[in-house]
Length: 407
Image (cartoon, rainbow, N blue to C red; front, side, top):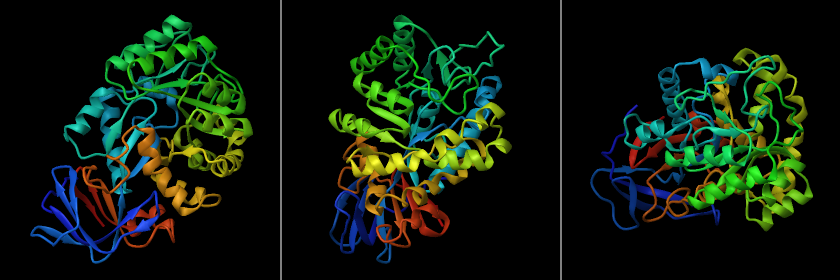
């Protein structure tokens, strides 16, 4: 997979603005390096004629694990980091084929993988990483079984998280990730599906531990995202300064109020529960984790409806593991059961860019923005499934100013 920089302009193209849901008249979009140089004016040489098709900003997935080549997350710590990096390259390139030009990794990816992508050592989406997620003993990133005592804490070990207890350990863990240049810090605020010993309905970390991570992230002009399912865990995290709640399947009316009060973000990941129930076992999900899926599967759609109607900032996420990652675009179909196409588009563009603190650079087609964009075969405001079937719905994908996919 290579970037083709021969097209310095796209002519006869109609630009979609996700925020206003407006589509422009046919125009010309010019590219300089990896940015949009200008919009409008006459055609030029080395231009691609879009034939009147619609262009929209490249998609952003705000919850991925690019190193998780299996649903058995405990097994990752036994794998070679170089092997997992190779599988991550394939995973990131597959995401690019589906139109995702930016990814936010929420546990596992490190500065080396992000640097390699940024330096274009391989063609890939832009990668925003947090390093290892931070978990308490027995928490969602503690992948030891009840009879295990030892966990390899070496920096290059491929566990998705690090286990720590107490304020000083949480501060140190956060500082370790931030010193590598992490874009965010992830805390496990409740139990989860993929971990062997915790309950989904548990709360994790004490208030002062959560505050410590929030303080360290804010001191570095970064933010904390929190894995949480129950309203109790969600609401507690929001009150303590967590900016982004992942999953949130069991949120309540108070959660909606707190999201709005603190201008926080919700990142639902509905497709992963559907696929874990259908394909989890064959993709390595342990039996104890399979038994947990049912408890969060059906509540997620109602939580999304409540958040959407309540005006919560909602970003796109998938959270798929191993061989299930091919279903990344199916999240569009699931959300369409309760959200309008415009709301869904914003979740994967402008709202996601706001979460990443990259407004004006990502999620928009405007002068000075990154030249990450898709040419579509149909209008997604009329038919959102154009994005859920990228092989037929997306004609071309531009990333970092170059044509990378031409279906």
